[in-house]
Length: 176
Image (cartoon, rainbow, N blue to C red; front, side, top):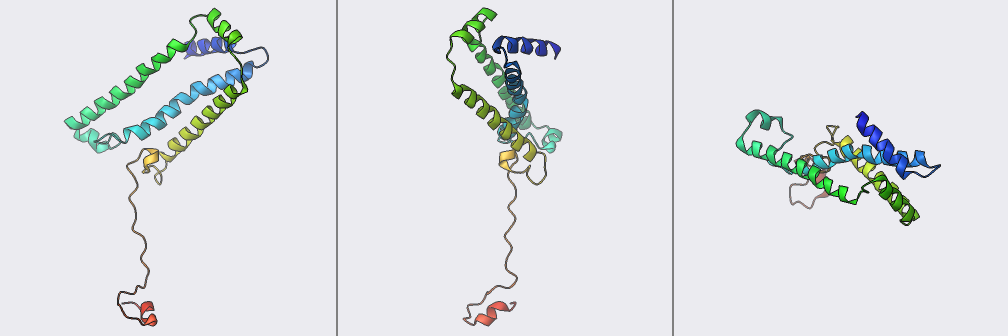
């Protein structure tokens, strides 16, 4: 944890201009801290597709071969995305000099800031919605929250229905 904090602080020092260190630190910290909640929200939605269900405690107790295979595939998917994220390292500057060169030569446009704030806000709202919905019993069954879908309750039937084919309007109001 401490090493991660020191390294991220050095990155902020290199990326920030004089006078906007707080803003850059806030944006970079927000982006780093949103990773885990967004990953949990996506995992809730993706892992619900696995059969037998990873969310069911009975599957852990029964411990069938099919369930072990499902758990293996879930780990494979998780580690696959972790290794895929290493591809981003190619786009990072190799040393301090290259980072400062990019900062000095790359164009600056306000749209970059707007897109960054919009993406961070969208990720925050998305992860907040999915994670909160998966915590409450009334919404955790929703597919959007990672559930299997809520059982649809039958619609209420009117207390008095016209089951006869009589044309008498008053008979429709009487119980059968």
